[in-house]
Image 1 (cartoon, rainbow, N blue to C red):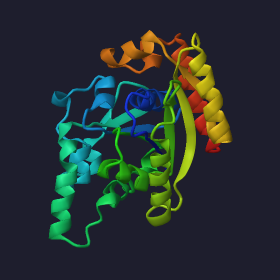
Image 2: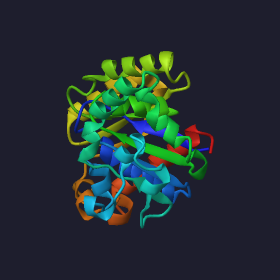
Image 3: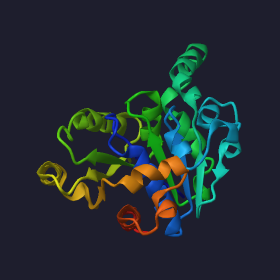
Image 4: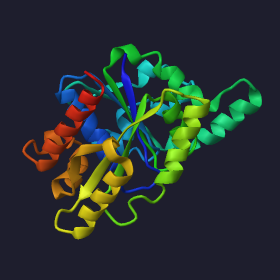
Amino acid sequence: MAKIISLVNQKGGVGKTTTSINLASALGMEGKKTLLIDLDPQGNASNGLGLNANDFEKDIYDCITGSCEIKEAIIKTKFKNLSIIPSTINLAGVDVEFVKKMLENSEFKQNEQLRNILALIKDKYDYIIIDCQPSLGISTMNALVASDSVIIPVQCEYFALEGITQLLNSVILVQSNMNPNLRIEGVLLTMLDGRTNIGLEVIEEIRKCFKNLVFNTIIPRLVRLVEAPSHGKPINAYDPTSRATLAYSNLAKEVISRNGD
């Protein structure tokens, strides 16, 4: 059965989508059959793997609202062992759709829809990676309820810990009420500029706060990593010799090791 991991941080610009794309691809390169779910209406994870709205008819919105079977929305990419369920701006309307469904049916559980549909395909993959939008709304709560664990990307910059307490409280809420097995997979330090003292100070502060939960791997701030999505490729396909490719390969190995695979 697949290990389901959500990448969550309600603060934008922390490297969450970049990590979702590149961790999923790196897991594929390690021989793990991986499904990436784009759960952000902006669709950046989909675009980052070379897809646009004209390339598919079904997306994750159709799946969680019951408009299609989840298998109909899965797209096999050209990258090793990697498939994706894309997203479009339609997902921004899921809150309204779910409120309507609750009014029609008092038994409807809005936070369990993603978990229910993923149960149908969990046996087809080794890992399912969910790229969440930068908020703690309904779609993100669906991801937390559906997941086995969460990875929290934190950028190596001032105000790095901003909002983390609120996120951790949301995780505790889900653990208490809807998904007692949810755990924190790890805290991932991203966007490190080794030339600045602040980056090193943030690393020290994060490690002091989260101790063994912090991944050993640190993702550097690199131009090539920023360029890769515009070419529709993960970094290991865009620039196999990049330091970022090595970093995400190491991260994938850490995730695999933490899960005893």
